[in-house]
Image 1 (cartoon, one colour):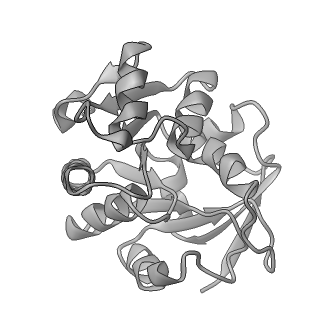
Image 2: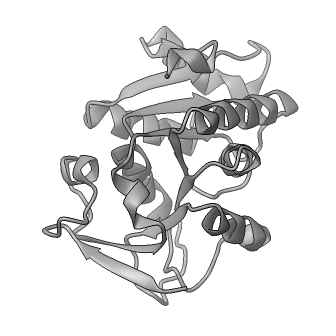
Image 3: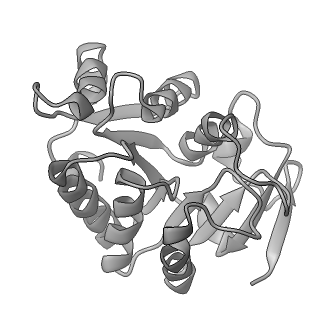
Length: 211
């Protein structure tokens, strides 16, 4: 599928993304670029999520998609994967923001998921050129695009030093609403989200709070 390059001064460039501190000077897109300017909500969380986190991620993304809201996530293992899958189950559209060139998919097991995203009218986005492989420092940078494309960010399960909390920090810097799903106080994967709520993030109990 064709990779489209969109520079920041183009009318095709997502407006919300253009307004963040340090926006990418250009983005690369496969799929439906029109949805990059539609109403969207980001869902992020732990790669090592529990069954509880999996269930919440699928249900939340499914219900948002049924209400014609685009979901945004990072195509990573765990919560990201289930966000994209829940959206697709609802035959909805989802945006995957990746940390490498669009000539590959990482992780490898999500290649088929990436195809499903495109099949249902979604998009895959990167700020990296073809040939650029995923590097450790690409992922935190990628997170500012996830939050930058969305009007708000939902964190579902995150350890105390999770990358999802970096996304939440970017969201606050960008003036986005941050929501956190409360979790079991004895679960390490809920430490980050429960702390977010203590610090003033919106406690999310039901998808209708986002509609």
